Image (tube, rainbow, N blue to C red; front, top):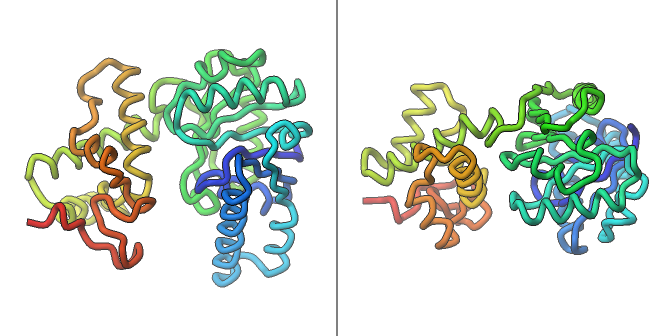
Length: 296
């Protein structure tokens, strides 16, 4: 596999494109509008500059990486020659099903179709295609160029050959692929999201404040980032979407999203992306302070 298409130029999409391009793959980065693509490509350039400043790559490496990325607005032309297509669109089932129906029609028959979904069923996604054996999950972690893990999710029909190809490809990107089966939340988010949800309940019930909860988990459990701050970075809307997938998928009340999380998303307090969540990012991420809403 030498030609890769990535659908979605947001945080995950541009990170995935960056990583493949840095390792010499020809990447078509696809989005629905030019502004989003320009922003995504600019993010890749800035992240490459960061790598250059740290001495992990050279200016020549940066130039080569950017030359390996071509941007497309038209999905059909963007995926036509791709050997592997990685969908990194919004964590929304209807959107993903529409994309995979189109991919099945536009991609060459031997192409592998992968989703970067963090919780949605690969089996369900594959069901709208005629190539279930070639549909698989590639759940990269954020930030993609830095994080080593790729959660490789086998759908009910995913073939051994497809799984082996994706596992090997992930290793060629310097990643550590871990094969998991297709159940709600897979492994990463089935464990992580209930912890974040419980941290939100702990705040909601007045057990402790935002910084206190995060400090306990950082210093007591050796987590690099507290769960409330992590939720802000993931996006509270994404956290809510994943909790709803878990709740619907298992039918177990322990996965019910905290009412505070629901209200914050409805109020557009989604974390870093909106400028405020559990923390206020008015003065930047490094200067974040707990939101005034949670100060007594």
